[in-house]
Amino acid sequence: MAFDELIHQPTRLRIMAFLARLGPDAEVEFGRLQKSLGLTEGNLSRHLSKLEAAGYVRLKKGYRGRRPRTWVRLTGKGRDAFYAHLEVLEAIVRGEEADAAGRDQGGEQGLRPRPSPG
Amino acid sequence: MDPVPDGETARRLLAEAREGARRAQRALAPYYGAWLLIWGAVYAIGYTLVAWDSPLADPAFAGLSLLGFLSSYALGARAGRFFRTPAGQSLALLWGGFGITAAALVLASPRLSDEVFSLAINELVALALWQSGALVACRGLRLAAGAFALLNAGLFAYFPALYAPALALLGLALFLLGLRQVSRGL
Image: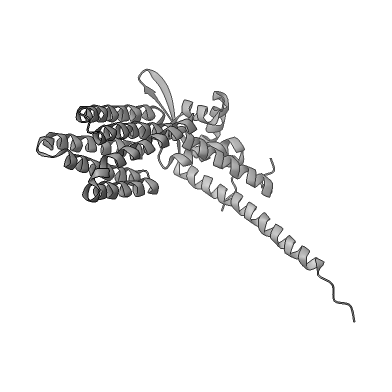
């Protein structure tokens, strides 16, 4: 399991989750991703640049008719990193719940009457 | 932000990830929903006319099916402007193959009774739906396709009087399901 500081940022986590949900090798057009996630163009560009630099997403520029388009895709490395990061988050939540359950049990024991000395 | 989060932050981040996945689902839902709307309407209107023994049933069903087929392809092309998936390309090929097979069945239809033609085309639809479910890894679609194949054959063989009304109702149910999906995506 690996905690990933790059994916940890909430907007990037949301981007990765969106791309992962589309399935392996799926691509989404930049404008549609921006609209679906409710981000500004500049904000999405900045986050995608960081994810691209880490090799987590691939950006492909092309044309549809005369209009330039950018396609965004999650790489295999990005998918692995995303799921590994989710596992870490889930483990933290499970760990805290287990601790809380342990504390509850301890609390109950603490309420039991103590044996009188001697 | 603290590099390793506490439980509360981890919960919030997991909710963030679920939200991202939900938005992807919501972005695709209108396309699936519109497809259900189209074919739900074709089945509901077509089989209602058949159930009423309307003289318009045959031409209306043929016209609606052609319109449904063309609009499904237009919908696929529109989805392709925003999303590109390997499954999407395979689905286009699969339903193209379905179109050719259905057209071949239409060619043979003068030698077939209306009932047998309907049975055959619906079994083809069930097979194509099952394969679509396999392509997009959707167990629900495969189960629905299997149930539709059995329902189609069972009604044809044992409850012929209920065949058209039952399929009209099924069409209405698909239409309503599609309406729900489309409105969710808006």
